[in-house]
Image (tube, rainbow, N blue to C red; front, side):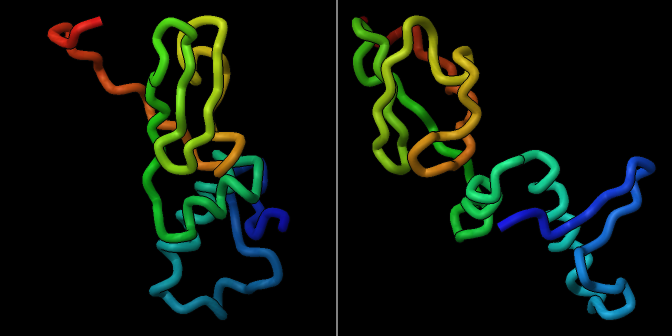
Length: 113
């Protein structure tokens, strides 16, 4: 599956194979969202993950502080990093479920280490 939308350098965009006159007005908003997802996500799997019912990003949570191991909250994928978390290591999407990774929540200082 490739891009369904196209865009010129000056910002004009459309849907491949469809004339704007054929598109019902109620679809302009969803088509604009599709274009935005395709602009952000170069992988059709990532764009599809946003359209399959769960539009929210996933959290990668630290499950082993000593070994710096994180787990995807959606699919359970486990990853070990040399330092820091997924975003600090260049991960924007989970390699297993292809969902966008949310920013890490603020940690409580009251929690025991």
